Every structure is written in structure tokens, then in C-alpha cells.
Length: 267
View 1 (cartoon, rainbow, N blue to C red):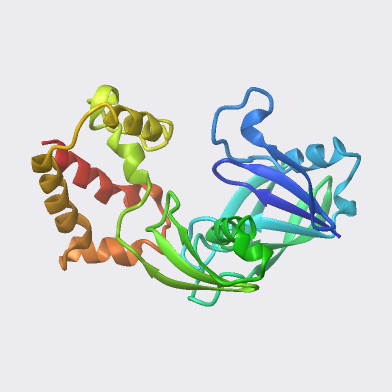
View 2: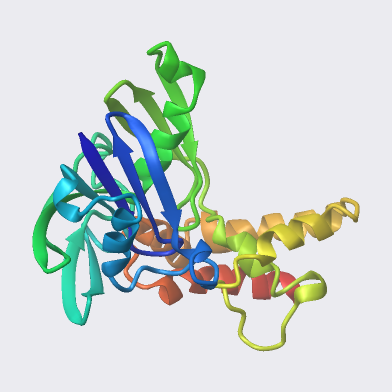
């Protein structure tokens, strides 16, 4: 049984699992001097990766496409050679608490001139599977709690049993992207122009820079007050931000409250 996993979006990659063993995994950023975190714009990259291992698309039993942003589903506009292709995938997070392993079936994955069916799972499903399946709990078939805090989500707590993960709750209303954005407002990387969250390398640099300092309780109090106002309070902007987190359709709109929070913090 050969399963080919495909990530078309941010940090695109191709992986092949054969009879339960990882045969190969190819990250697009490590090919051809590509920039970091690239999307996969052309499905020919899949054909090439398979060919390097003496396989063609017809040798694959199941193609699986990672889900992405969208209300209820995600849409991908890619090329197959010179032919534009539109694919529909699963959303970023599960549509309901028990739907972590619910897949969306699709058809039209054009590889080397042929059309193939595929399945698509919510983006967070891969994070949950990776965390649980590499843990001692999976080895002994035991249930476990799993925390997923991805760039486009609040920290999400799941209870995982074999083949039965379930979403429990979001722990607090802040996304990981706040770290990347903060690097443009504070520290040696601060910019006067509009910050770009796409510069994801700043998050780790800012964390290292913070480690050189010490805690100032007055500053912590300001951050805590503004956090409540912008994200956690019972105000219309905060309620709307919390309600929209699972139905991301536009990154700029999604990031706007984070910018507003950091701008207020910096001033």
C-alpha cells in the first residue's frame, strides 16, 4: 500500500508511505535553492519526486492532500504542467468536535496528464497524528491529551484514542502568529512600515533577544490589560475575533486584530 501525502500550501512537501514505512519526504524549500516556506504551484513537482524513486503516479494507491484555510473547505489553484487545476480540500480545523479524522473526497488531481482521486483531511489532523503517533501513548495503545498550537489557530486541546481523536476546547485566544508579528514592533527588528507576518524567521530571533533581558512587571501588566481588551473581553471586536478563528478565509483580515494589539502595546 503506497500513500502519497501532499502539502500544497505554506512549507509545501511530498511524502510517500509504503506499507506503513516512510519511503521519502521532500520539502520544496530544499530543492532548487527555493525560498523558505514556499507553496507548491505546479503538480509536476509530485511527478518528479516520484520519478526520482522510480515510481509514477499510477503506482500510488492513495493520494492525500492537506487541508487549508476556508470556511468548511479549502480551495487550491495550481498548475499541472501548463494546465490550470482547481482542487477542493478539507478546512484548516475539523468542522465538528468528532470530525478530526473526517476526510473530504476529491477528484481531478492531474499528474502526468492523468486524473487521480484524492482524500483531504483538516490541517490540524496532521499535527495531532504526528504528536500522538510519535509518543509512548501510541506505542502502548493508550489515550492521551494532545495540544496543538499552530500558526493559524488558538491552542487547541484534544483527547486522542486510537482512531478516535476529539476536540475539547481552545485554551486561550492567541495565535502563534503573534510571535512573528511582535518581532516587527519590538527589539532590533522593529520596522516603521507595515509589518509582514510572512517573515516567520523573526519569531525565534525575538525569543532569543528577550532571553537577554529581565521581567518588568509593569510591562507585563500592560500586555495583560491589552490582551483582555483585544482578545479575551466580552466586547464586539473580541467576540468577533474569537468566533472567526475557525473560518479563516483571508489572512490579512485574520491578522488585523493581532496588529492592533501589538500597535497599542508598543505605544
